[in-house]
Image 1 (cartoon, rainbow, N blue to C red):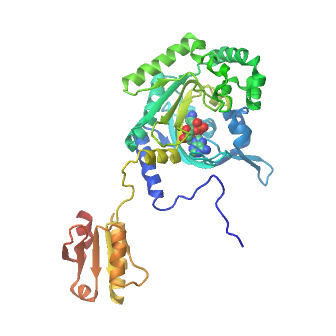
Image 2 (image 1 turned 90 degrees about the vertical axis):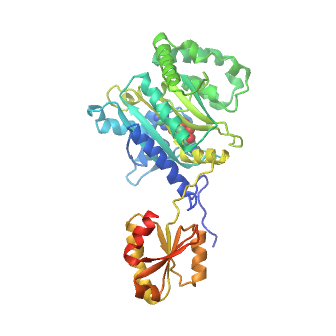
Image 3 (image 1 turned 120 degrees about the horizontal axis):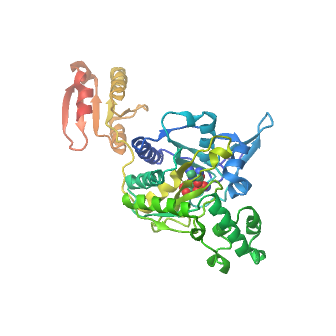
Length: 422
Ligand code: HAM
């Protein structure tokens, strides 16, 4: 019988790797707490209609990439491809607009699913860390959200990152721009790929994002959204830039940054890695403002802005920049028990250590002292504690400091404290 293998585009995160994930996740969580974003956990599957309405029927995500199936009650269910639509649904369902503290600032961390062609940086199951701020139309919160994303990367230690921003304007600006794009492309749309031909009517902005047709002459001469922003949209975008400057966050304005989801308006942004050897897909993080989404999902008029990044791409960036990070908590103590009576002592001692903040390990394979010392070395134990019949009789343990090589006798009643405070 052949072995069963992991599905394409997914990965096992094994010990050695999982510590890196925990480390990154903890940095992001802590910074969110300082920025006062609170965690929300929504289901991994939702009604398919949520993403059709939220992310948008004409997007690649909805048209080509969703894991959609009928459940046993004949309902169409989809594994979430992203988090924003779910957060907006939950905001409406739980009437969060009525909460006393506004805007409502939320973060989430969890697996997302997209049926994409797997390649470096592109998985079918990936973990997004995302934030959403709902209920404020202040350009200062755009700057806060962008700065939070940038500062997570900064805390992690990444140096080669670049922030790119754009404005998609309000509804009116977008409509005007849409018309300009249709006029620009329609005469020659037969020279474009079939996706772009569909996009012309459904979502002409997405033509600018096409990988197949990006070298077509009409792409270079396409009108820029920035020329179609009305005065209030221009002013909004200007203020976001002023606040970013005030925060000392460098950025580039790229009028071709359109993003792949339909809900965006006004501010759109991406953070890219400039690190050499990072690979073809350089986007680490994407986000923007989505002022109509909550209303589209049946809620009251509520502005919103957020971002999401995948932990996978963040870890690739750490690797590409060759950051020297010690992810794992070191082992404090390896306890060597010699003989039967020692075993009865080691278990309670181990328990006491572990319950008092000491990471401790022992042998469960009845190995010789030498083999146990090898394990202790491999695990980078700070101390080895040796407990034989003699020591037990005396009520002590032999404590070896693995760094200095010093060896001392410590009474069993003081052992845990000795290691904890060393
Ligand atoms: P998105 O640009 O589709 O936006 O995805 C955001 C980030 O998720 C990407 O920049 C990338 O880090 C990661 N990502 C997406 N697809 C994959 C994949 N197949 N494999 C690995 N990583 C991936 C959104 O999802 C929006 N919900 C972001 C947002 C939040 N906008 C406002 N609030």
